[in-house]
Length: 83
Length: 418
Image (tube, rainbow over all chains, first blue to last red):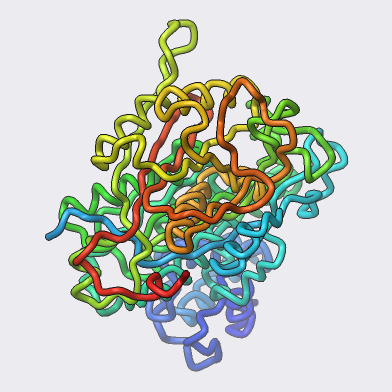
């Protein structure tokens, strides 16, 4: 399982934080683009989820990664399918 | 629109000074920033000296988001651009985004970033390579990041002409002004002091292997033995003079009055190199006679054959010992695309009436017949300066700068300086 806090940690450490945005649970439903994460930053987040949590996210999964919550749910659905 | 391209802002990140004042004070006084390479252990390499920008802490200057996406060379460029824009009192959000452009030079791209990711690729596998490698390494990265950071969407570009790039970018910026752009962020930086970057530089055979920092890079000297590499550079704000006046630019350092670039003929043709043509065309472009040039900031490769060729051209164009010649990059090492720093030195020489010296030269080659400014700076009126740069592979660039054009912009800080 990956939690929203895990994802926020990835966003903070790998993609760098935007000073103006506080990365807490309130951002769960805010689109990545509105948080200042462009498509390349989302690709980096996807890559880090794969690396750190061993979840087999394919390259085109970034289309499903619209918001932090959608990303966590999609990642966990893949983990579920894998088991 | 006027036809004059003027410099209204300067940002410097140099091995002998972070910031324009620190750099200029060191340069006037002949203080060098060349020392042992500390960025990595150079013991296994034949070159152990470099001009490093040691007192640079990226987190003091840039947001983390940008830092993780970019190479050290881009960190230096972004920081210098911020400083230059502040110096010019430009608030980019107050200008139309398509009226501002970014044209920088890059010689090496993001080698340090690239080396780190290649190491990950080999030791851990492709999944461990960051997505940002795709944008961090390539030559246009600094231009792109400056453009994004400041919302500048005019005709942007990057020039990759090895060590002539810092001059060529400024020439290109002037061209952009002539097609209607009002302001260009230009110049360049390079930072290739990692093992991969150093090895790439070694391939030219032009780097100095001497161990003494005071004697390792001595152009036009009997003991010339190649050059010391350096990192850093300078970013300049170049504007149409009328636009600068309209928006109330606080100061004008000078005018980019003439520029030319040439390319050497293929080796073996017997035809002369292109440096002389670059000089004469740049002077013609500026409408300046040779005897009106007050100082030459020479390329000063430090390679005996190249020094001889340059000295020969200078005595042909100006006459023997007829114009002061200096090489302040003896205090920084050669910064590749960052040699836009020489244009800064030329502008400040004009402002302050001081020609900074070349350091380390003790035995000038007598046959060169150059009036070298060595050891200490020389106080003299400087109205017009010629800046030269050559890049490996045949690039030549010449730029003429002169004091600010009259009646275009109200006076500023450059009136008090002497």
